[in-house]
Image (spheres, rainbow, N blue to C red):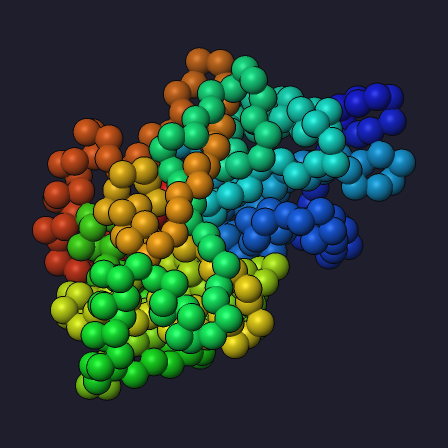
Length: 353
């Protein structure tokens, strides 16, 4: 696909199975301060782990990359077809050297969506065209610099949350990190139980395996154990000197033992030892329990701007779990036996990218 821009820029769909193409885009993302979710490696891991195809549009001028729009082609019998930037991420959107190139990429992806029968386009960050639907009041991100040492990190946390961390440090808890099979199995079991308690289908384990395999040393799992049993675990990514705890949770017993508090504090220390300087606590829905929890840690919310375009005559996906239409479904899901939820949940969750 080609679209003219100042007579010398072209925009085309990219084949991420071509290692040369992928390498060029990885370099562009790196050199222009792009996010983890704008990396082709992220899209490729999503594809391997869920089957949602990795694609994207690249803008080039005289053979040089000037813009990039990463896309996951999400297809679900329950939630329809959408182009998402980026699938299973909290960020993405256009990365371009100038606003004209960014605007042209957005216009090009509208044409691409219609031609490939996608009902909508979802941009999680980046510049949003003025005539698209956009909002900045539904989700916020939480990030802050790491302190210089363990004691300073503990003192940085507000008093009430700090007391819970100190309590966990006096408890018989042990912490391990790694990405081997025991860590992966423990993490998935804990995460599956955690999201089931929230009434949410669990993502397929193949997604987590694909991410760990793709990112290698730039991803790992930190797990908290009590009496030899794993009770809290988080899968994190490391990108541009920032640690990003992304998929984490705890079993019921973790709450009384303050294992989640221990987990995130230990991750801060672990990340600093790895040379990280910033802790990105991730996205939460405005006003939700996780939103308040992260504020209690001392993080300040930063509004996230998302955008949506729908093809003429099409309805966009509705994936908001707080929507009234989902209340009965969430309540029913919580009542399912965990074994059953883990069996059918991944087939549903593939469409929640």
